[in-house]
Image (tube, rainbow, N blue to C red):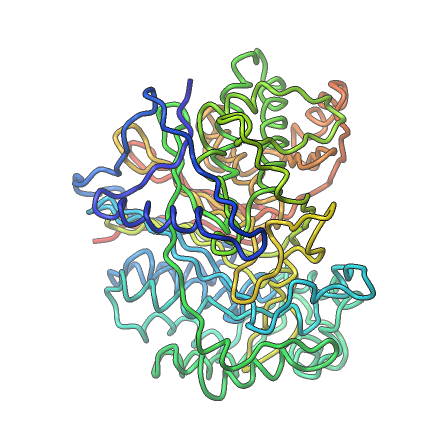
Length: 603
């Protein structure tokens, strides 16, 4: 039996994390009421708490950066060559991504950051996700008794949450920074003022969005992205002096320049504008705080998968790996292994969809979901390949006390936007950062050179189902469930093995889990794992990416096994992965986007 379960990650911090997490799990919920999910007594065969090791031999593998755009990678490398921490390189890279890849993330959005500090062995999860305004209501996307369609809600003012990315910059730099704060923004300021060439992906995204959204109608975004009424063309030299001015103010005045005053007022005004103006206020913006949440870890054979806790969907990575490890014991071919991976996804997604939300507003039975007995039970459940697996009930399995009936089914579909970057610095510290404005170009609303998010559409637009509340219902001040799940893997000696993550909306758990299984079980390199066809199994269909080999063969085999297969020429992943080999750093950038990998020697 392989151990899968919640593990504190630092000898110094685990008591604090456990108490903080327990408080979230056992709190009276705003949606359901007081209904704590108490965990069973831990089995004697569960191992003792596992700590990332305290001391480390000198790091001698250099540094590496992989991200979705060459300009962002160059910014990170510039910081690392000055002796900056991986966190500072991530800040510099993301500030550039907000400029050159605005369809995916930016200052007006949010992010999750997973940080590994090698010297002390600490792992930290900083939640900079957008939060709901105080004036948000559980039914704000309901009209005449029916939930609004995604496209109707997407670019409404109701969709805009309080941006968290800039506050995350500050918190991360306070905790880990070595360089002066202002230096981190120099690459992005320089690029915004001198200009950069529009990439094929940005140009293609503009053509895609124009017919379905308001980006070409809102005066500011129309002038910037659609000069003379036409979308920007590939190679156009694009300057953004407003963006440069905003970054200069943040660099000189700190994040107060963003969260109060003129910029905050512009954000609120843009969110409140018609059509369907929202309630986001300057008070909401000024009160935003980054949350440090627990890291969750689970065993996969001799490795330990560590990832982000709710409202992230990192739990799905651990569940998929654990269920897969039970199912794959009967596999004799690579096709059998892929089928086991498909079933593991289907079961884990069903549980993720049913139970996960903001832990401050709904009780989440996370320790039960990751309990080895429950993982084993789920792996033993049988569903017809064409059938939609139901969520499980860990309360019934572990204590004969059902809990699943307290929640209604949630079919929220997160849009496939977002970006991810992975970095290891010259001291062996690592960052996995996933950032977003939600759908392409966020809400399409503009303030001081950047776009605002539409993150509130990641909440369930239908607040109840079958007469019961859903876990991911809208609650003022809370954060919507996210598929973003930056992840790291450690070996039996607690040495870092892997840094991974991806954009892709609801498909993120599938994309990220593919890289973990492909590297750890299928023996692939980082790039081979990223290049391998994406397979997404959520609900009654299995999507298979067939553009790359062996996609069509896999699709045919799964169809022969009885699965309902949907063939896709491409998938919207943006996997950026680092695998730590004994003598080198093995990096990969997803060819489905425009990223690169750079490995450097750092003094």
